[in-house]
Amino acid sequence: MSKPKVIIIGAGFTGVATAHDLALRGFDVTVVDRGPIANGTSGRTHGLLHSGGRYAVNDKESAIECIEENTIPGVIEPNGGLFVAINESDMAYGEDFIEGCEACHIPIEELKPQQALKLEPNLNPNVLVAFRVPDGTFDPLRLAMSFAATAKSNGAKFKLFTEVTGLILNGQGNVTGIKVWDRTNDERYELYGDVVVNATGAWVGEITAMAGVDVPIRPTPGVMVAFDQRLTNHAINRLNKPGDGDIVLPQRQMVVVGTTSFEVQDLDYVPVIEDHVKLMLERGAELLPTIRNTNMRGAYMATRPLLGSGGSGRSISRTFKCFDHKETHGIDGLVTITGGKATTLRAMAEKTADVVCEKLNISAACTTKEVPLISYREFYRLPNDD
Amino acid sequence: MSTTKTKWTVNLKVYRKKGQKAPYYDQFTMEVDPDEYVLDAIERIWAFHDRSLTFRHACHHSTCGACGMLVNGVEKLTCITYIRDVVEDGGTIVIDPLRNFPIISDLVVDMSLFFDRMEMVGQRQVIPIAEEIVGSSQKAQSAGNGKEYLRLSDCIECGMCISACPIAATNPDYLGPAVLAGAQQSGLDKKPELLQIVDQENGLWRCHSAYECTAVCPSNVDPAWRIMDLRRQVTSQRFKRLFR
Ligand SMILES: Cc1cc2nc3c(=O)[nH]c(=O)nc-3n(C[C@H](O)[C@H](O)[C@H](O)COP(=O)(O)OP(=O)(O)OC[C@H]3O[C@@H](n4cnc5c(N)ncnc54)[C@H](O)[C@@H]3O)c2cc1C
Ligand code: SF4
Ligand code: FES
Image 1 (cartoon, rainbow over the protein chains, first blue to last red):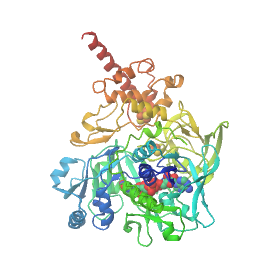
Image 2: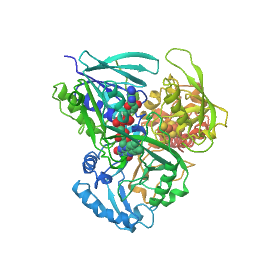
Image 3: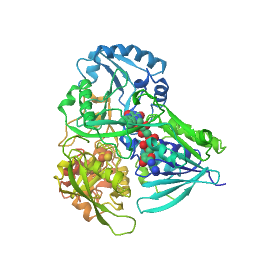
Image 4: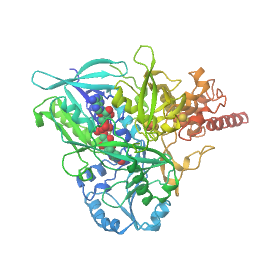
């Protein structure tokens, strides 16, 4: 019997992790992306492997998702993070933070100012208290490529620079495949599958619109700024409710300050707003004052695929959701997965693969918690067989 | 970056190639902010002018190594190259794919052989700070008492040193700067099997010390210095063998 075929649209974190999961469960998987791996939001992610501490007070569901998934191996700087109080408002938030972390089972260690400054001498000397958490920094492209490489080693095929231009619907309005445009050689063709997984992040609405339906997605970009010195080994978080420029991450020879939160119309090109860049310097310098003595290396943005309507971007939950469009809109053959975080990519993939299995009446257990990932470089070394 | 400052009008002359068809240049006249990066302008060509343009990019802040291209004939990491640094108002920016790699489409090159070689010499992507070998032009990067910490290594595998290398241009079998630099960082003492890989015709004796690699490296790896250091490691191993 031939393997059931799944087409995944999107080679960001969500798409590559889903490909890895489904390939392990024995599916014939094809991943299609209009650009290279991680060209969308994933490649431009800030890069914090979240402990969940950031969400422990106001968004416990995503805090728990983060701490449970906090162990992705590989291209990670696993040096921990600090939540740092600089003023009285931060101190007041500290009480809720301790309670929230306890409720979400996020291990924290309280550090006195001298201890924190000994660990990270570039911290603001006015630090009042710090909590150490299991944060890390990841390399976005290489993290995505490790999943893609492992999926490929288990038979998944990747069609990059290949844009989905339409969905193929049968007589009942169910999705049976996709129409694509290979941008490397300007060829157009069709691909058929038993299920099409829409993992296009902030762009999921453009794909579901091809089937005539809507999903509640709120694309919310944010700006980040990289500076050219590595001023810390820990991820430095402001001990307060999530706000602008309140995380500084070490990465290679840099620190990266992020982020902001705003709304846009056109997702394919979002400008980096100069005021946001200035704000990153101001806010970053509150945590690490020596940032002022470094040079800016790059300013950039990415667009969060947040779920839901109503409320401001900051107050929307960071959890993810998988839509089986048969249940939501009576359209079979199409599943949409969006929301979430880089940190929770494996869990998002597990959920999506479960939904695909259920739809096709296949019982196959998820093994991504146990199976180690192979080197990201294998993605280039392995052939892309048809 | 989007600002209220004066905009410039510049021409982007971009190398194009699709499938087996002959390559050509396309010209796009665009309004830009001089403080934008070259990659921003290229992404805007794709977003608003020509959806068929292909190029590699991911991080947009110099950590992934995907966006290396030739800008006016010089290797640049386009995500951190300001437009004002490569052109004047009314001028032309010529964008080509990297040299010394097979071209897949437009600005996209095939890096598989390069990654194969990086894997072969065991270039680590995450290095304990205590084990870093700091190049001649580098500062130690350990903030605080960095002993027990790990960090992502400097080489972002952009391939720009290979593109700029005059030896790689004439001999595709030459391992190339980043690969030899990777071997130096892996260390012959820790990985003696590397000796066979680097101490050969297309290995480290091919280098003519042109230093083009170090000049274009966006990440302070200093491959030229590392190749010289690797030569010292090899010579001292030979010397040791002589007296064994
Ligand atoms: C500013 C910012 C900072 C963040 N920081 C963090 C962080 O520190 N830690 C963390 O855990 N998470 C972070 N996140 C969240 C995380 O980056 C995202 O949740 C994640 O990258 C989303 O991945 P994705 O695969 O769903 O979407 P994407 O990476 O956007 O992937 C979607 C893909 O679909 C493709 N696509 C779209 N349309 C089509 C089409 N028609 N045909 C073919 N392909 C198509 C795109 O090319 C793209 O590659 C951050 C997000 C933002 C915006
Ligand atoms: S040595 Fe420098 S130029 Fe060469 S691949 Fe590494 S980062 Fe790029
Ligand atoms: S896009 Fe990652 S280095 Fe330029």
